[in-house]
Amino acid sequence: MLRVLQVANAGAIQVVAWNGEGRPRAVNGVSSTYELASKAIAAGRTLAQEIEFAGLGEEVDLDKAAKEGKLAIPVSHPDPAHFVVAGTGLTHLGSADGRDKMHKAAQSTDKPTDSMRMFLLGVEGGKPKAGEVGAQPEWFYKGNGTQLRATGEDLVSPSFALDGGEEPELAAIYLIGPDGTPFRLGFCLANEFSDHVTEKGNYLWLAHSKLRQASLGAELLVGELPAHVEGTSKIVRDGKVIFEKPFLSGEANMSHTIANLEHHNFKYDLFRQPGDLHVHFFGTATLSFSEGIKTEPGDVFEIVAAPFTLPLVNRLAVEAETPVSVKAL
Image (cartoon, rainbow, N blue to C red):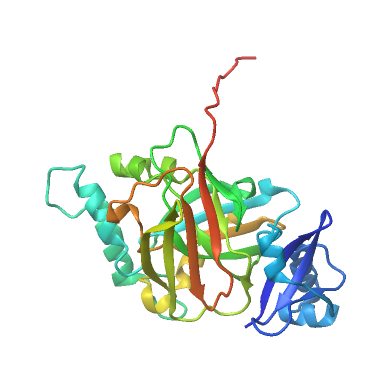
C-alpha cells in the first residue's frame, strides 16, 4: 500500500513516497504533502497518480530519520489555524464499557448512562445502507494544527490537567477542495491523548478533557483502510513495560462506517472551507486508564498496528504553570 511521509531535511520538508517495501524515495517538485494534494485536486488526479506524474528522486533512509527525530506529521498546513482537529467517540465495539463504568460511578442509578445510550444508537444505526444517513455519533473538537505532535516528540499535558492518558486509534486527514469538497488524503496512526480523570468527574466535561495535544504517526496510508486493523498499545516507565494491550480498529470492529462518521462531520459547511485541512480521530476501545493505570511524566507511549510499519512513540511531559489573566480594553 502506498504511504506518504514528510521528513525534515536541512530546514525544509521532503515529501516521501513508499509502498512499505523497498526503498522510500523523495517526491520531485513539492515542498509538502499539502502542496502535493493541492496539485492532485487541481489536476483531477489521485495522490498516487500525482506522485507518478511528479516522479521520484533520491532514496530516503527512514530509520535514520526516525533516530534523528526528523519524521514529521504526514500532512501540515502553512497556517496551523486552518488545520481542524476533531474526532468521534463510542464508535468501536466494546468502546462503551470503560466510559460507562466511569459515568456510572458518578451517578447513583442503574439506568443506562448517556454514553451507553449513544453507543447503542451507533450499534443500531451507525452502518446505514448505501445512500442513507445513519445515526449521529458523539463528536468533539480538539483544537487546531498547533496541537499536533509527531512521533518522537513529547506530548505535553496542561499544568491544570488531572490526567494525561493515551488513546491509541486511527485518524484520517482531509483537504477541502476549492469547491468545498472534502478529499480524504489517507489514514494514520494516532494518539488522541485525553484527561480521563476530568471526564470521569462529569461527562459534560468531555470537551475540557479533549482540549490538549495529540500525536500522529509518520505514515499517511493512501487508499481504503483495511476492514480489520489490529495493533498494540504500550506504556513504558523507567525502561519497564507497565501496560500492554491489543487494540482493534477498522470497520469490522466499529459500530459506525467511516462514511457515516465523515458525513456527520462534514455536513456542516463550517467544516468545508476551501483550503482547510482536517484530521478526524475515529475513537478507540482500549485505554490504560480503564485498567487502573495512572500515567506519570516520563512515561513513554508506544503504538503500533499493521499495515503501518513505523511506530508512534511519544513521551509524557507536563507544562509549567502559566497564569492566565483577562484585561479589559
